[in-house]
Length: 222
Image (cartoon, rainbow, N blue to C red; front, side, top):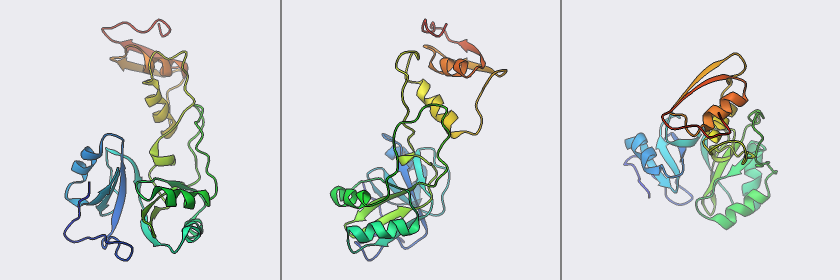
């Protein structure tokens, strides 16, 4: 899906967006919701990546926000890698088009670990930029993004034995990104808690949990 506004245009390598803009990466399955949220500010969408006029703004349906996007004309694969590393070291490729050429540029960039994390590890502090190959000789890149994780997704080493459901991963992600989490001495209320994934996380952090639901909790959480 593509949408071009009346006063902004994208045309090949020579004419990138002509107004200040921000790039938003829709969460998987929620592109239409993001487009509706951004409304008339939308310039163009390629896959899940949406360009919208104006400065970065809160977007509930964006998995990651590219806050300082720029277009970089390139002459070759090596030139693309050089122009990105001239800005900063760490980059993540979000590929929507020109996949093979984009992957060859990414291979020339410094390696950035994207291994799953153990819960409790702090979020990365080094800036992680995002980029895509908009045209074969045109990079769209943002050195600063709203998330320090690739495409805004935190990958964990999962505990496949103790939790009663995968819902616990949502709290793991929240507590990885937030500066504060519950601990010993804190009181938590988990409403609609069955089968108990969130209760399991809160209890494992040492908090006292009141877990309320009509349905029973999984045996390992009781």
